[in-house]
Image (tube, rainbow, N blue to C red; front, side):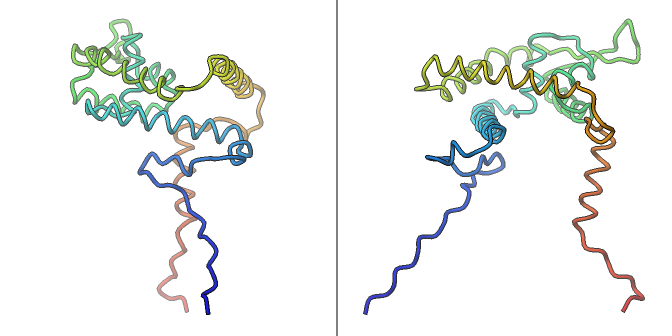
Length: 207
């Protein structure tokens, strides 16, 4: 008597390490995904592809973010660099400290404002531009391989419109709750979530 065939097991996400982008989307799944989620997956995949190449030069993706800004404009303050990179100042401070230790940049006091520190690239940091920019261009080429030029142009217009719309939404009048929280608030929210996730310890005298 033949054994009944078991139903095929559903495969979970494809784990590929820290930069995992999740399962590959095929068929109708692509059309059913929210646009924001597709943009997120694309951004992760692009970042992962670039990090693979940056690793050949012992450069992290986080450091690349600051390097590409400094290649265009040196002498920025930590705050200005944070705004351009779209990250919080504590994150920028830690990154700049590590990059200075690697010899990529130096920090000098602003002669017009002694409280401010300006960021400048060293010759070593400047030399990385010729090595790393071609890698970023290669990632773009790989990502768009086989895509029609008209589709690329349409996607670019759509993404620009998306960015503009969300920028307008961010600056529109908001309630006290709907706003961009400060670094201190984010830290407090993070601690709150961790505290809620831990079970309450029972007191020594509890029964």
